[in-house]
Image (cartoon, rainbow, N blue to C red):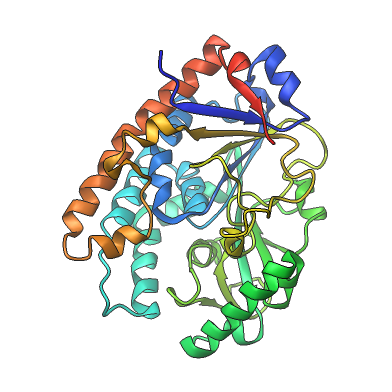
Length: 356
């Protein structure tokens, strides 16, 4: 049997998985990374989670956390009809068509359409009163010039942030404040140890937070003055929490399931080209990372993951881009099936490798 998935575990859970496999009751957090259209490779894995209901099987609550597309996946999985909401999100996102005539305002309107497509009033109520899941949506509150919607001013602030981040990731605090919108701000220990602000998710701010978490600076207009949060302009949470940059289980109980689209885990958006930059010490200790290997990526259209460059490459042929993204979504079903088989058979015990 060909193994398309790779499995890695942090030092606190590696031996446990090698001895007992993956017991669903161990999963206390599910984390979704940002990364634009790369999330289409996650579709089959997410479908498997929804069908099997593997999250929360132990009778405990599970935190779904993420930025940008990762946060939208989590929201869809917590809706009243998760498979239907998830498919609405997938269709809305993949059918976006952008041209050189678009502005941050028009792109923001398109993303609002994506959120509205899958997040109805009944879903907002369901998410806030979910029987199993808590939600944590990562955003940032822009500071100073980074809050400006003037592209020249904002662009200069982003360049300054990039240069400052190269020297020290802590310098990002000069430009952005982490703000996490969470449905249970008192029930999760990770918010007591992180640098930032936690805001209660409510029916008044959930849609605003959902839009803000995917509002990539310079490309998308920010979301101003979210209800219940400090005044300011809110932007994509991936700026500070791009893929995985938090220890969601500092209490040392259970594990974080992290389906990723690649091997390297990049902490912040500006760290993508900084090969030496890794998540903070301890953040990966209780993480089970699952990601598609090279053999699977070779099966994808163009032998690569979808990405934002596809919007430009296929600007004159959006139908071909959509066809490719649909093909990636369909092929990804293999990954969900393979993961579930590895867990149920116990094969994951021999496949697991340490996170380096």
